[in-house]
Length: 481
Image (cartoon, rainbow, N blue to C red; front, side):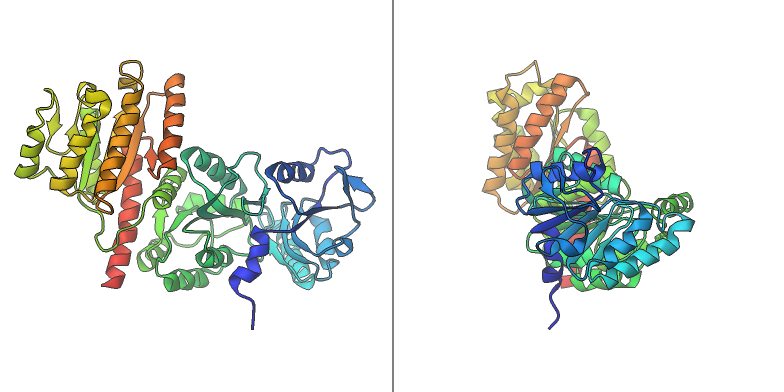
């Protein structure tokens, strides 16, 4: 019986032995930095520097070839001249499971296409799977291996495949600030062997991964990618950021990884037929992943009825228009709900029709606890399927007691707990960029995400992420029907 996809790829995500090729005795090369980073990240397995003449590198015993290491190598990090790599891989004698070639000068340039084929053949002859070339590395919190300097150590539910190393770094760093936590991220570069489809298949089977994100410039095995997604039937949300969707974008992708991205209409059709979510920007990608990480889809009742609640009248009006264009209805409440809210006798200037627009003077009543009364009535009578709470922080900080903001969100959480599964709850924290306000926002965001609340910077971000969740719910609903 052939090994399962988990058995085949888990050594990449939880390696016990790592070989590093290209480290210098002077300590200044990129592979030396990689050794330092995985040590700092907590890697406790064996590290084998490979060097033709050195006895020791960075305090570690060095070996002349991959065939001479004391134990077989789960993961080899290779950053040497492109022309030297084929011989290195051929000599591995079946003792390496995964080799990741960081070096460039392969299929992304015309003169390197033949060399890329040669390296792929050498990897096969050496009995290993090849990742890359022309990429940056892997980031796996569960395996304590990272190519980035900054990244969360906690293992999370988001699995990433990135055909761009730089964008992979951005996803980790920016995603960390937004509250994303990862089961792994693999940069795949030119995809001479291991493809996005291989890693997608792994993440779909992996119990640690609940949400999958892919940055793709091309799918050389497009039919296989489609078949994997169709067979998965949206069992896990898959968010795809596709590079090269226009003529000029295709040209840029070809010069980046030697890729030809295919017709954009094929990717739109892929999304419709398999339920994957297609997004246009890195911000949308991170927002959608955050929404799926923190909220549970409700396919039995795809999200439509949405309530907006917060301070900032113009913001609410613009958001109502934007949400409507996305298929999210911010419909005014019925007479019963309006009457119940009116009975609270909220201060003048408060709008209670949906959007529920409350000046700061209203929201600071009872140190913010008034929100619980408002929200309880909305949930009980209005029965929303999603509620987006938006707070313009500049109107609070320095004008109200610090606990008002905490009490507002605590009130929303308590109401959510009284009506489990009724409505998705998202928080928008708006800021004017003032440094002390941004610091307060970061602190508040961290606490909210820890409580399972997705936090967005603007209503537009929340709307698009909610629409992605809605699209996933609709696909699951239609599939079951």
